Length: 181
Length: 205
Image (cartoon, rainbow over all chains, first blue to last red; front, side):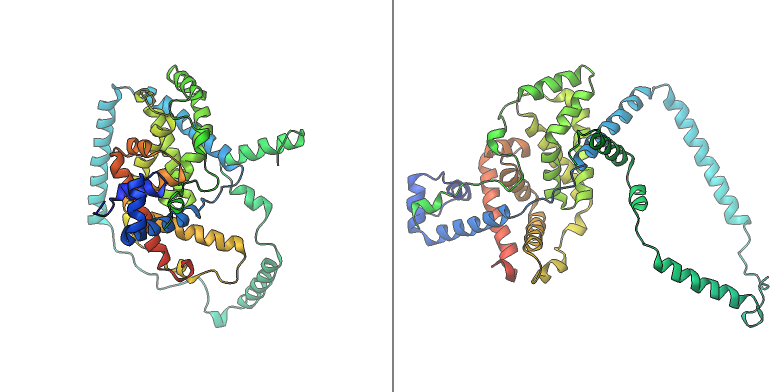
């Protein structure tokens, strides 16, 4: 074999599937052997990469979310009737007309915003209550610093509906002795 | 170079299903679930989601390279599969058909978000000297995933399906609508390009 190996031949050789002729060529041709080595190194690098594993409860949440979306979609598809389309088109037209009328009025009639020249608050150097308020504010800062910034309740409030359901199920299983947590 | 040195089988990354566990045709339990879905039993689709959610999620993750988008793409792929279930003819494995949907979903997503994917983020070049082995492995994994995400579309799709999902060349060809020869050539180019992208970085040499 005089000419160099094609890419698909080299891909087969990478898998150990090359014909004896291909193997012989590789043992004699430094260019093709070099290209194969490059690909082999690329393969080793590719195999060294993993996808991070999500938390254990994730898969249950995922399955429920897909189920919920399918559940939401199925009745919605059935509920949309063709007789609704003219009514929806009319409604869209009315909304569009209303929008443009309001916009025209707001562009022509609205007065320019002005800043008040008078304030109900006294100047800072005349305000006797200001010192008391500043002291209270400083005390509030110390209290904030003493409290933990993140709580279990705070974490729980961030859970989605599906995540909460999965967590409740997992805790219930755990309490009845059938859990895996 | 010895003949033995050439025989390097293309294997799997950790955590992904080995080929021996996957039937090449339509699995019987898949066929039953699909038939039940077609007869209106929505819960049967739940079984398919449970069976393939990990593979689909990982496939999507390889494309979009972050959890949130992978989650969205994987959910979208299952929804599309559910809608199109009546069109599935059963002449290939359900997983192959599902992968095709997932690949197309990710390609559309990436096309809409092309700009942010064009460059590797600079902070990854900082290296992870002094941190624990696990963090270094994570860092290396992240760097490889970023490099994979930079490959041209067809090379990336071929590499993901062949290396990380252990599809045969024929299955990859079916998923991507390409010839087997093209798949082999794309795989070879993808691996060469991956090496160029990664070994140019000092701590990968």
